[in-house]
Length: 325
Ligand SMILES: [Zn+2]
Image 1: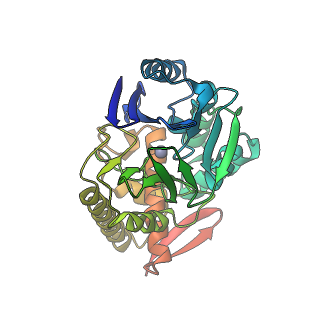
Image 2: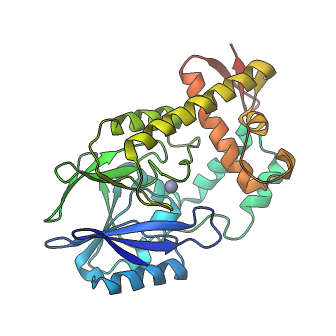
């Protein structure tokens, strides 16, 4: 499905079958010399087809089009190598470009395994996931990738977009902003219908602290049109920024409550006590993949409280344990 949003800006809805995110909003900006495609969907035939059909409808030739990835997640970056032409450059922040390179380093996944063990998962639970073929959504290795620094500008004719580095959802998430036209593409930094996932990272300390700082950057930003990456592309931007801040405040209160009651906890244990909107009877019945999201989220909140001086933490026999103060 293609929709013209503004002069020279089009939305291509890319379906993400079986994924709770439902769809990726890919955007195409027609430029004076070259066009810019923002985000691409999974590395799959379905996403490729939806993108190709959309581009054809608005008469866009990928030989005259570059790609900008708001971040490295596979539902944004996965299809880039499939849809890019030989002439397309693929832009992503320096930090997330490094993250995408890590994807192809086998030792990196050993470190990820170790990290989840340290959060409190059992070896059996993790092995079951890591050994499933295709448990992580692939991204393509081929392509003419270029790393970007904060503040990089794209002069596209009608629009002049500046990159705003907004770490938190990933280490190098970026938004695109045209100050004069008051148009913002906020990727997964701000979503209207769902809450962006904030997890602990190997490559980034205190991801929630960074995320909240990046949300602060959005406060007062004049954006008449702030387009996001999943489900409904438009909403009340400033109100949503405030809601997301309040959401994390409440989550932090909940986490502190759990810590006060239990005295000490691994992220895994803390997650088992937090409220989740997953429709299963109890924590033990959560699918392990869901547990990985939940424990990652608990980890980012505990880590934030540690950095704020509200909790202590220690690595005990390879296990990360937080203590109430
Ligand atoms: Zn994402």
